[in-house]
Length: 476
Image (cartoon, rainbow, N blue to C red):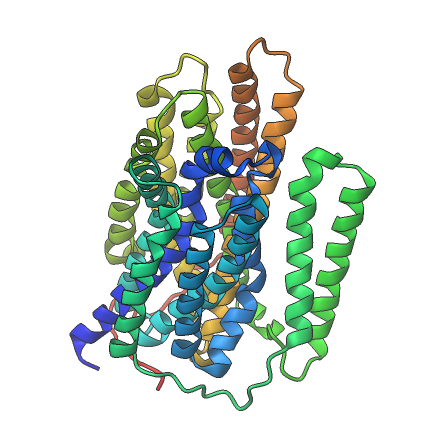
């Protein structure tokens, strides 16, 4: 493959991932407009975000394994086509039920796109400096897309219509499909079989989705209610049955041997609480600045603009200059600590806090921490993984990210709601702030768990050739 071709491939794959991540957050700014237009009940509004994250996370393992077995480019193109069609359906939705159902379908399509795209990146660039640089670009797009989505969503909502948050995916999806067909080589599976572990896929998907649903509804039902505890017990049972199935299946969805790779286990355990803190923060803070601080959709988006800028700078410096010298373990420790400090800063907000003093320093800390963490955790989660399991490793990492985000959104919004409803504050804004402050404090504790995993579990991989630029390898 020509040297320039692999970077064209990376740009196309990053664009596909940008669509996926953008739609995780683009709807946040549009929530008030969607609520008004479709008559959403306030308690159901978060399902516009949760439905997408839930099916995205629930089907990622299936999407990653399908990419390994049936061809990465084929699965990627199927996902982009489905994502584009469901974006159209969301844009023309006329009721809350329709938009939530179509968002769930969109999440399923994203679950085909994300792991297949990342696995193509992993098989295009060998371990070493070239792959680290590619992953730096990838994570800039992946993590920055969440914050960029708030700005894009604000512009489209204020100057066009909330529906354009989803219509915009149609031309982008079509152009991405054309580019991938032209530039990305076909991948014929090298696996000795094409048996997809459907029982395992059904068990893990049902288990993950049941757990998130239980935690999402817990504030309404009560955390110790029969409904909540019963569903959580069902979720645990399903996940235990999944592990039992994987240990016995001749062609498991997730060969449990992959968890013997220490950094794969550590990186996936670390990224869940990290994403829980970040996605919960985006949801709560975007609603806070739009309702309590009376920001317009564009102003809300602009308030998050420093996030992708800082993230892009840090994510591109880390793999080129810092990881080769320090390894990724220490960077993960520092990165997760910075995220936690930023969340602690947000937990100190007051009714008189300005954006510059109360919010901007937190955004700078969190974005720098995420830039350090995302690159390092992606490298850790994919190093030492055989090429025929690249889709599996990608699916695992993406699953951990999305399920962490979905669980974090459920738990932290539940914490915020519980504290706000029990508040004795004199005004609704004061009650909202009390709930958000409690949720930000909880998020900071959750991200400290990620730091503990980085300290205890993750190990730097000593490679004598780590600084050498490797030639690309593409599986045909």
